[in-house]
Length: 64
Image (cartoon, rainbow, N blue to C red; front, side, top):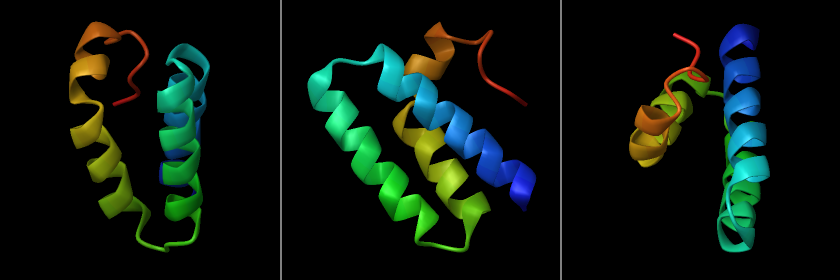
């Protein structure tokens, strides 16, 4: 469970750093939502779905 949480945090940090200002706000909001929920696996899938296009461009980053 902790491992999944860390992966999510890593992904969000990455997107917050490399996206523009508008996306930054969106991702910070998303991060807050995630850490208030206990079902990390579900949230992880949700993030993956939302950022699938970005992840395809950044394959080297994604942790399987």
